Image (cartoon, rainbow, N blue to C red; front, side, top):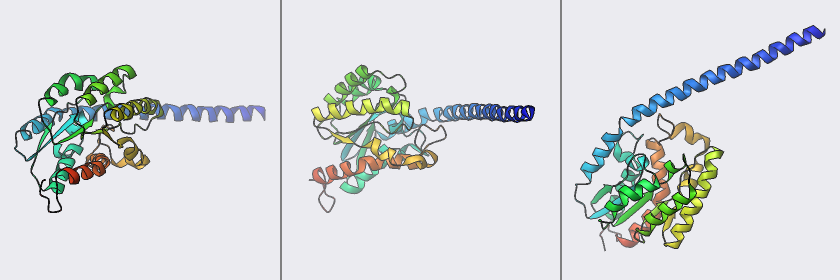
Length: 256
């Protein structure tokens, strides 16, 4: 009787070990697939960058300038103009009835510090009518709160008062969310000091829940897809629309 219980226990333990081994193998395969998918998306980086550079040459009655990282570039979208920047540019055209030139200064992989070094010197040479800033997600991997705050202060200090600055999106995993919470407190504090409106990107993406993981991410499970970028644009939309109506449009769509 005792040996029978021992055998059953052994079999049960073996089942747990086997299940754990299978889970480990499955996880490794999943990680390998994500790595392969990331390499596929990496091949689109120069394509998106060139697309935005080419379109920055187009003339427009209003100048929209974006500071950001690969999300502003639209990596993971079916085409660059389906990034949140592209969606917002269409919204600006629709609300104001004006043509829009888009200068997308964003760089894939940019951190706050890299934005200060590369994007800000180009930004200060421009006189934009609309500005959006969404930067900082890449800082979470090697999190340095002091460096993050220093960079955010430099960027926000160079922005016009009408600029819209987004906080960091929802990262799903608790160990990342703890860092994001600190980053977003910094964003809110520095934005308040400069009188800048903060776009609730974190709240908007968090409200998508688990379904968002399944429907709003590209094949690398990091960058948004077309649907995900529409959600990002929705986070900006209320503040942007109110600003556009107040500053640029009459009911007939004619600029003041």
